[in-house]
Structures are given as structure tokens and as C-alpha cells.
Length: 106
Image (tube, rainbow, N blue to C red; front, side, top):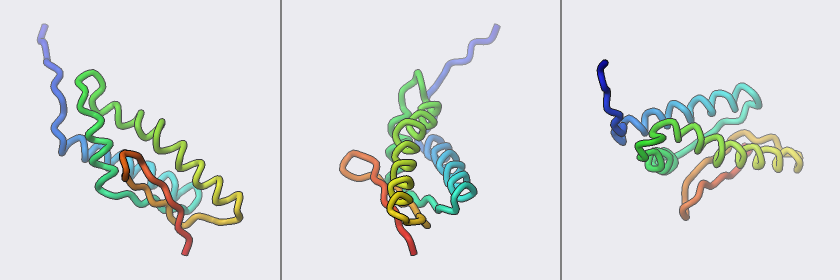
């Protein structure tokens, strides 16, 4: 038997994984409703920063996106559509220790 120790991924790897996951969401949003998702480096930094626990590691990225980002994106889009606005772009940011969301139409 070979024992392999579980080590925490380096921060740059966590950021790459985070970008891959966010880009997957970005593609999905565009294909579903032609809404562009735009996010900044602060979002990537925050998500990667929350994934340093040995027990969860990069698996936590999916949980953060599913529990903290996707529900809020859905709410923003539904609220805009209820007002008769077709969102062209959704801006995802991180400020004041929380994710921020805003809709832009051209």
C-alpha cells in the first residue's frame, strides 16, 4: 500500500480552478439567456481564499458558487425581467466583505 498525503493546493492553482468554474458559469449564462457574466479579480481572490481548508480544498469552490453566487444571480436576473429589462451583462464583484451583483443593459 502506498500512502499519499493530502496537501492544500497552492493559491495560484486555486485561482485557476476558480476561473475555470466561473467561466463555465459564464458560458452557461450566455447560452441560456445571452447574458454576459463579468467578474473581477477580487471575486477570484475571495473564492480561492475561502478554499484553504484541508478538509474541503478546491471542492469548496463549487459550494461557494452554488450557494452564494448562483442564487443571487438568479434573483438579479428575475428582478430585472420582472421590470421588463433583458439583462445584457451581469457584473459580479466583491466589496465590503460580500459579493455584489449589478445588471447592465446597453
